[in-house]
Length: 467
Image (cartoon, rainbow, N blue to C red; front, top):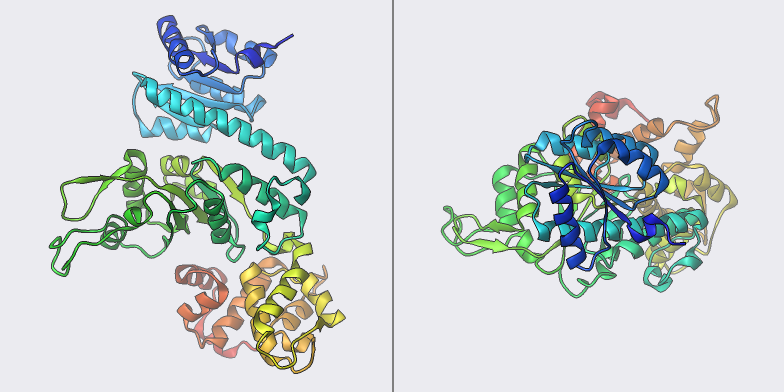
């Protein structure tokens, strides 16, 4: 017998019976599933416990139990249920509170039928996408991918990457905005390009932008462009990033580093889907898919009000976490061999193997700089090694980093200790040049300064410290 949740996967809760009928008619006329409805908020939790709805649309202002209270209760017991809220006023604080409690989206009364249908469609897609990924996560096998050949150029044998590939494969055909999280050097941009290549926008531009170093004037000029004569040195029209990526994908790297004063400008364009070139009074429509990446804990940034919750909500229709290399142990040696082949082709006597001691140290090292650090390590090692067997002596930094850990009581150094030592070593090699160090470490210059402050690395320490 068909359950209520199968027949009515959507539940609408509102104390106005007339609005319930209107929403039901709107959804049915758009060929969406007919929703179940409740006008008494006191009956909601009992109904939800008996029937696992996929989507619940909640009015926030209701007698007896408010929509915000219901949202909190539903997400606590049924975290996978997609909840949408309806509010009478377009207050940012209300939206932020609802999002923090787990709401997927919100609508403002009077409810626009077209917006409602679009949001319900996206919510249903998101529910199906999450269920697909959850099923895959239990098995985590590359053999379960629909199109494994699409990932053939990425070196990955560890099962943790099978889940990442599944998420990429599942989200690519949609037009969702996606936030890709992961430490510096894990390959976030590569994964963004993979999403673009597997999407319907693959034949259109992929434009990558680092968000860390934009001032207000530079941001507007680079993102929106300008017309000739917009300012003194504007001698011709200029396309901005949005126009350059039109029809394709705009990748916003290090999104959490964007200044708070500029986050509102980005949000407005994403919401309105239009912008103005500097100096122009004519608006331009945009058709871009937004992919973003960050190496920070962006939820913590939102919690501490350093990143706008409403912008985070617009960007994070789906989130993919790329594991650090220390969580992908099976990938370390295959990556080493890949980089040796990449950088060793020009040698008369190419390196054919690794010494057992080196393999052991590589597997024990935590790689705070992840794949980018490993690549730089192997590129240098190829130049230093004179034989056909790569030895520990030729891999700079690895022997001291791993060796120092053996002297500690636990047998392993902490990640912070290894990161600090590696940053000091790179700064020594670059004679304190922060910009060069950032390139070697695979992070932006602003992050280098933050790490120096965090670890209290003084110029005197760089001169005195020897490894």
